[in-house]
Length: 378
Image (cartoon, rainbow, N blue to C red; front, side):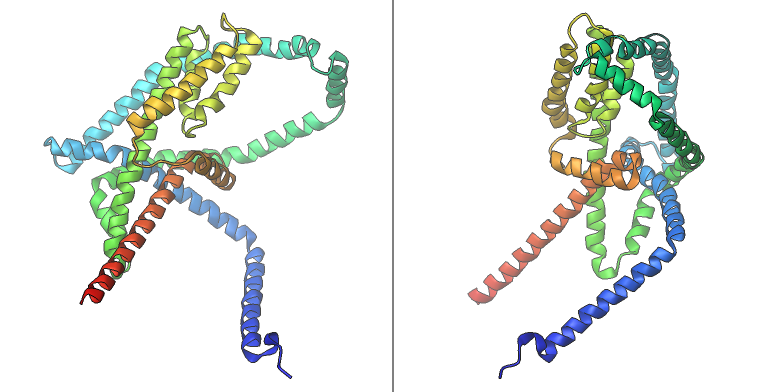
C-alpha cells in the first residue's frame, strides 16, 4: 500500500521546520509585547531624530541647487556661498513675518470678532428653522445632546489629551527649530562629503549602484519637492487674488488655505474649498451664490492640473492620484499630521526606487540577451 504524500519524511521535515519558525516568531512577538513601553520610547526617540534629519534633507533638495548656481557664478568658497543662501532665506522668512503674518492675524481676529458669533447664531436660529427633519426633531436632538454627557466627555477628553500632547509637541517643535538650521548648515557645507560617507556604508559590490541611486533620488525627488513647493506658492497666490476679485472678505486666509492644502496633490484645492463654501453659504459674504466659490475652485483645480502642473512639475515624476491617497492614508495613520505632510515625498521616493529597480532589471535582461545572442552567433 502506497504511503500518503503528507506522511512521507520530506513533508514531515518541512512541516516541522515551518512549525518551528512559527513558534519562534510567536515567542519573539510575545517577548516584544513585554517591552511595549520600551519600544514606544524608542519609537518616539527615533521620530525625534528622523524629523529634523528628513526636513534638512528635503530643504537641502530645494536649497542646494541655489548653492551650486552661486558657485558657478564665482561666489566661493562654500562657506561664503552658504552664508549668502542663509541670508536670502532669512530675508524671505522676515518678509513673510513682516508683511503676511499681520494680514493673516488681522483677518483671523476680525473673523472671530464679527463672523464667528453670526455663524453660531445661524446654527441656533436659521439652521434650526430650515432643518431637513423639522425644527421639532432639531430641538429633540439638541436637548438630548445637551442633557447627556457626550459633549462634556468630548471636551474633557480633548483638553486632557491636549494637555498631555502640548508639552511633547512643544518639545518636538523646539527641538526641530533649534537643530534644523544647524543640521542644514553643516549638510550644505559638506553636501558631497556627507553623501560620500553615506555611500561608504554600502558594501563595495553595490557602491556604484548605490551612488547612482543616490544621485537619481537627489535629482528626481529634488525636482519633485521644488516643483511642489513652487506649485503651492503659485496656486495659493492665484487663489488669494481670485478670492479678492470676487469680494470674499477673508480672501487672504482662504487663499493661504488653498496653497497649504495643495501639499496634498490633486485633492488639496478641493479639500480647501469645503470651509470656504460653508462660510459663504452661512454668511452670504459674496454678492452671488456660494456656487460661485465652487466654480472658482473647480477652475483653480483645472488651472493647477492643466497649467501649473505641466509647467512647474514637468513630467519627471508622475504619481497617480490613487497612489497619493493610499500614501496619505497609510503614512497619516502612522505619523499623524507629519505623515500627511511627508506622504507625497515618501511616495515620490518609493516611485523612484521602484523605477530604478525596474531599470536595473531591464538592463540585466538586456545584457543576458546580448550574451546569449553572441553565443548563438558564435
